[in-house]
Length: 157
Length: 145
Image (cartoon, rainbow over the protein chains, first blue to last red):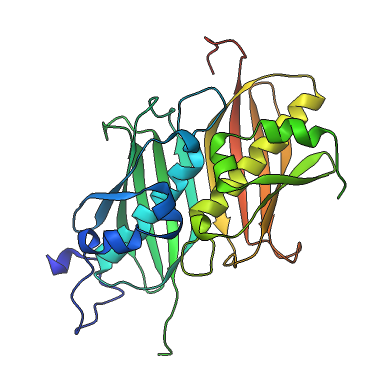
C-alpha cells in the first residue's frame, strides 16, 4: 500500500502517516473551514471526501436556494490539501498555487455538497489534484476541479 | 476612489454568502466596485492568514459585482450563472483587510469574461487573481442559460 503512494515527499520515520479521519476534527474545527461547517466523509489511499452542509447564509444569487460557488471553492481547496497529505502520508505546509473550478450545474436546493479530491501526482515541490463536487451522485457532479499546490519548506535541507 | 450612488444598489445585490463573510463595497473605481473584507476567524486558514477559499469568495464576488455594474450601465438584466473560475494565489493574504476589483474584459450577448485582482496594502502587489467566465441567462423564472 505504501508503494502505491506518491513518494516524492517521503514520510518522516518517527511519525505515523497522516490520517484524515483523525485529523479532521482539528483541521475542520476552526477558522474558515469551521465556520463553513466542513466535515469528513471518507478517504482512500490518495483521496479525501468532505461535506459542506447547506445553510441559508451561504446562498448565492438572491432568491435562489442554491449554495454560492465560493464555499464550494473552499470545500475543494480543503479536500485537496487533505488528499495531498493523505497521499504523501506526511502533514506538511502547502500553499495553493492555482485552482480551477468548472461549474456543471447548480447544486440542488437545500442540498449539502460533497467534495472529493484526488492527489494524482506529487513531484519534489508540487502536488497535482483533481476532483469533483457533487450533491449525492458523484457521477453527476456539480463541479469539476483541478489544482496545483506547492510545498512550503519548513527547514533548510 | 470615490463614493458613488450605485454602491447602495450593488451592495443590495451581494448574495447572502458575501454578506455573512463580511464583504462590503468600499468604493467605486472607473465604474467597477472595489470590494473589501475584514480579517477575522471566519476567513482564517493557517493562523493569521486568509484561507484560500475565503480569498476566492472575495474574488468571485468582485467579479459578479463588476459584471452587474457593467450590465446596469448597459440597461441589461440577466440571471448570472457561473461557468468557471481559475484562481491564482500569488502570496499569503495576511491578517488585515483585503480588497478586490473585477474588470469585464469582454461583455458578449450570452457570456462575459472577467478578470479580478485582490490586494492588501500595496495595490501593485496582488495577493491573488482570478479569471471568470459567466453565463448571462434571461430574466424570467423559466429562463434557460
